[in-house]
Structures are given as structure tokens and as C-alpha cells.
Amino acid sequence: MAVFACTLALGSLLTACGGSDDSQVGGPPVPQASTTAEADAAQDTVEVILDEFWIGMPLVLPAGRTVLRLKSQGFEEHNLLFVRKQADSVVWETEGRLNPFESRIVTLDLEPGAYTAVCDFSGHEGRGMFLDFTVEAGPSAGGVAR
Image (tube, rainbow, N blue to C red; front, side, top):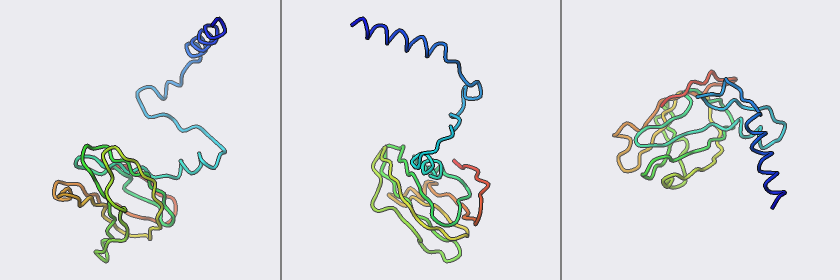
């Protein structure tokens, strides 16, 4: 018991004296450098948020292999499909719907061009759940829409 109390006290002391990076106060955490393959893969993952009734994702994605982390943050089911504007055709869509608060990782290959991301489940598209985005070759400028 004494060892536990000492460990707890030491942990509290280190936390209190550890300092903080003021650049993180009130903002998103600053990514830390890592050499693990898992950390590298996480940095290359594009987060896509599906909520009532909007899609949050970058306005520019890189061409080629793209890893998406889909996060359903709403209380309703959602799906997602990408429509290539030039051909007005669906080039990718989720396998089934995402349940409320479900996350899913998907990998796909995208060609450069103009696209629309759409949730067409249960009339969501008509309620504004779509977003135009661009796929560009080379490094992307990013920009996130909500």
C-alpha cells in the first residue's frame, strides 16, 4: 500500500511540475515526431466526420492511395459516397451504413479531379449533407470544411 501511495504521489508531482506547451492551450494537440510505422500511417490518414447534417473533411485530397478514417458523430446512420463530377458517376461508397458513433478505416485510390462527397441515406443529401472537394496530384494545400 505504501508503494502505491508513493507512486501516486510521484505521478501527481511529475504531472504538476511537467510544464506544458502553451501553443497547445485551447487548440488541437501538436503532432509529435515518431518513427513507428503505425504513427506514420496515422499521419497519412484523412479524417472524415459525418454528422447531422454535414460532412467535415479536407477540401483537397492527394491523388493515389488514400486512407480515410470515417467517424459517424451523429445520432443517425450515415453512408458516404464519392461522385466524380466530370463523369457524374459514383467512384466509391461505403459498404453499408455507419451506425451512430461508429468509426471505420477505408483505403481507396483516387484520380485527380473534382468530386462531391455525399451521404444519400434517408434524405440526408437534401438536408445539405454533401461537400465538393478536389483531388490533386502532389502535395495538397488542405483546408478543412465543415
